[in-house]
Length: 359
Image (cartoon, rainbow, N blue to C red):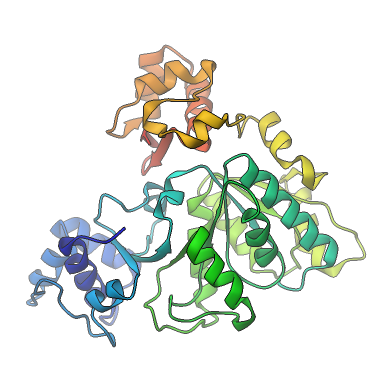
């Protein structure tokens, strides 16, 4: 989608604010909330942004848009609700590909860059199965498990979102160029980093918080004791997302971290090919009917009968779970379970403060 002039202007203002010394993502969020927008926050500090204004970075936002990138500022109505659950949501998102994937049910598959052949095949099998059920597979574009997950997802009718640790002009790792181009055509590339920013070590922990926030569940295939995948798990747990892990051999050093997760309470996925079945049995994923995948979720097509009452209560404005429980005369725990299932099915969106609205 092409951003509006107002979105371009707002993105430019947010980039200027973000580049100021001492302005973290959290601080920027507070400035924007106080002022009402990035433009107003910048004006309050004595600066103005002309329409299509240039940030201090190498190229104006309008140039990036002309290159085929989409930009979504924090204040845009298109900004994903799930990311606003973070205490430090990215001020600006840069995208290339199918933006609609951000509003569909999503599951992350993460793991070791030095994955074994068994691990890569497991990730690919699960991604293919999830995509076949209409679920978007989210991962981080790294070597090993990430790459296998993206490839598997591209084989199904669903698709994949690659969250990058660099800008959209930088393909990292370089060996993933064919995959990068394939995802840009049939999936979605997403990053918070400016287009020419390189993949730096401190970028990847930041990337991992986005992966965790975009999904309803995280699956860890292989993770070493100090794997970056475990950072994604930490963020997922902080956000209340479910965590699954594939058991690995005790002789495999790349499975030490993922096996430890099982001891700490992560759900077990004993057979990769049964990932959809396991999630259905856990109450996380209702079977997605063809009509539910191909139709607009806002129409309510494909909503399971047991969830219709909860779905009909929702509106386009976010509602608290307690309010939904009262209106449906359901126990709060049951209402929450229904709302989570609607979210996974793509019929509802989760917003900050455990509020939900129709997708």
